[in-house]
Image (cartoon, rainbow, N blue to C red; front, side, top):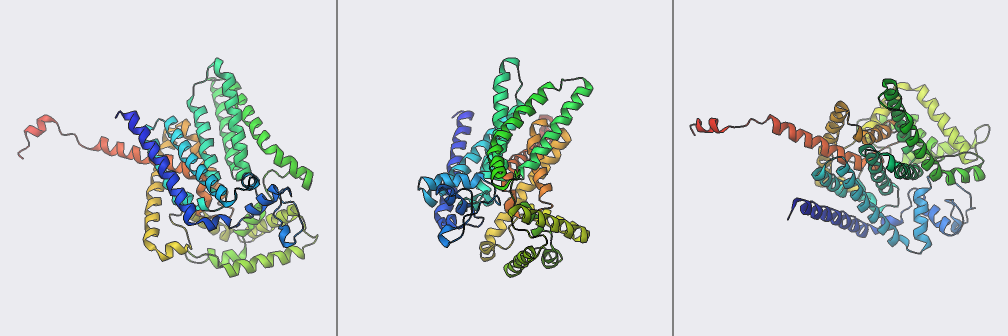
Amino acid sequence: MTKPGILTTALMLILLLAGVLRLTVVVLQSDQLQEDRDAYIAIARNLAAGHGFTSSRSEEGQEIEPTAFRPPLYPCLLASVYYVKAGSLGVGFLQVLLGVLTVWFTWKTGLRLQMPVGALVAAMIVATDPVLLQYTSYSMTEVLSAFLTSLLLYMLVCQLTEKSTQPELTNKAAFTFTTGLVWGLAILCRPTYLAFLGLWFLTRLCAAAFKRFLKTQSAGPAWRQLTFLSAGILIAVSPWLIRNLVVFHAPILTTTHGGYTLLLGNNPVFYQEVVQHPWGTVWSGESLDAWQKSLERDLETAVPPRKTEQERDQWMYQRAKANIAAQPSLFVQSSLLRLRRFWNFSPLNSALLESRPLIGWGITGYYFLILLGALGGCLLLIWKRESAWGPLLWLIFSFTVVHLFYWTNMRMRAPLVPAIALLSVYGWSKSAEFLKFRKPVVTTEQENHNPL
């Protein structure tokens, strides 16, 4: 079999493995697909029933009230499944399909980055990633966001590795516009992609200005590209923005959830019970519940009253900022804790890992090797200034910075898995090349003089 044939066969086997692993998880943990941790299922069922974007449970006698507390893309996707009466079976199939497509686009991105063999290894990493496998059986955004990352990175890398010519200008504009659509959908899945967008725009504008200053290239192409990209993003997010303007009379681009997640990780109770304790301490459910109830009491007695979602969100933002200003040293400690949690090798407070420590050690070793390679890859690429890898680096940097402030844990880095996999393969492959280069070569003359 020829080398291309071997690589194709390997890809098919990896995709098959990704599908089988995810299907197995869904079958073994099918009951988790019905758990509604973040109210996505409630919103989806209301959408399918024609009640609009609301998490209210009319069957329990709750009044239907619109919400913007959760990002809209995932519940809208679930709503299409519930509308055709596919239920949890359809959701499970959707999760498996998204997981396999994530592996596929990771491989395609690796090919664009000139890693024909490394692309397969990166695809294998994504196929076997424990976090993505675990959350395949949850109706949450981890799997969808990882898919959108893989697709978005592929499209951005394609633009950076393709030499544009005048006849291709129209096609390139359409491709850039489509990239904007995907980016807009990613923002509607997880608002953290907005930070990535801001950094990307800033770097592209600075690069264009620098080239214009050196008179090596006109700034026109960069401006056109950013214009088409912006148009795609605006088209994608405008329905959600318009809906919120009509319903809430406010231009809510993301959610009304940000204030809560900022306050969740920046409050005196969290500082006292977690930040000031040894690593591995988690916030107990009883204490968290008591804190949430005290928060509701504070909201009820606030002057003026905070009744709407926007008012509650702003109040929580203000409370979090006040906590940060009042205890800056503890805020720094909590930020370092969040950084460590975000890049942790093993999840905290996992019943499965506590009952089966061997699995826990396996996951720890798995992530240690992958993240070590990714760190090496990042450092090498920064030193070499490889522009094609820029989207991967800025994506990881932006998510890391955001989660220095907001509540976080290991699952929050699920959208980064495709980028981490590619960077890890790059880092380890370059390390292997270096070791091979450093290995002494034994010549024929030396062999002839060898007494053995």
